[in-house]
Length: 147
Image 1 (cartoon, rainbow, N blue to C red):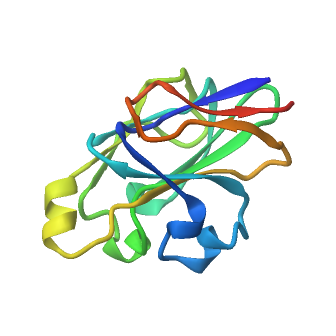
Image 2: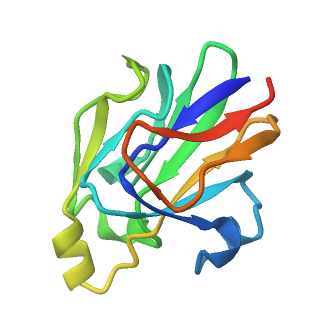
């Protein structure tokens, strides 16, 4: 089993409830969504920043075991071109679970009408054995994967 930690504190919601078909239909993979309370998005597991999307609206961490987890900060945030996001790492950098990857200006995004729902998706071929429910603190177990 591998454990994916919550990259943000927040309320957990099923992917089905996400207002974006790519996530709701699990086209990229399975996982959960978070309605964040925390502005500091952290690495959900130990590994390497395999992808840091331009502007910092999303990132992928790949573990040494080949688990890839996408954290997508808000919906349709690619169009913000980095406005509201501050990155703290670089692509290819080794990172420990819980280290800050991106800081999000949640107040500004919400004021601009952005849906800050944050999908956390396992994009590698690993089945989810367990999901947390309700509220979660950043860094707490979110998903357990069969590896």
